Image 1 (cartoon, rainbow, N blue to C red):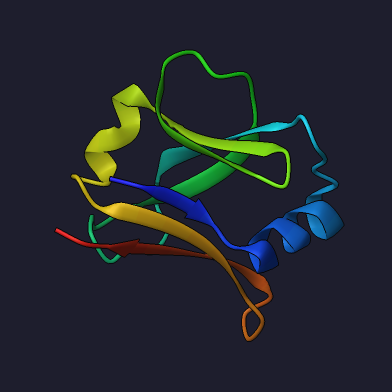
Image 2 (spheres, rainbow, N blue to C red):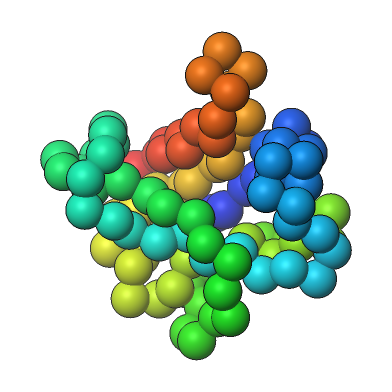
Length: 97
């Protein structure tokens, strides 16, 4: 299980959400939305302090992470955050397994 944030996604986060080096960004499971792996659940994004990191990565000085108790959502798969120019939003890509 791996977490990746593309350079395009990092640029979007900096421009649209004013994220900057040193910030910690939590990726969390939320009820609702569109998902290819769990009906009625999707990923959300919030600037927050980690409690018990399950997976994480640092991209351009920004820490992105998923808490241990939310790893069930990925079910052992990799998660990549990329910027979709077509939708002008972050695209959560789940792969593997």
